[in-house]
Image (cartoon, rainbow, N blue to C red; front, side):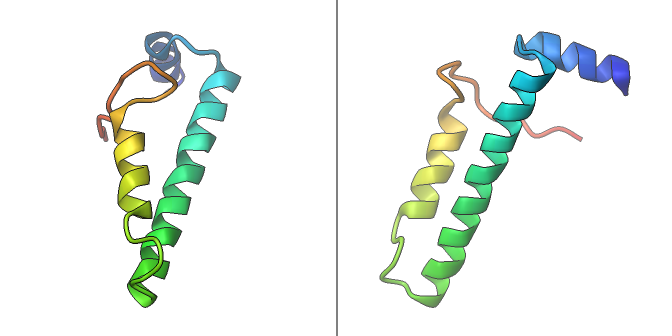
Length: 73
């Protein structure tokens, strides 16, 4: 697992803490999108496109690197 992490960090061209910050920010934005979707489900007039717009933004790239999210294991 340690070697896999080192390879991943090298591929991402980030230090451990840089990567941690990016991952935490990404996770926080995913939680915000989920919360908007749940609120929209209860009150359809709220966040009409908020969750989907945020998901599109997240999937279009990160930090200007123009990488799309590729799910793995």
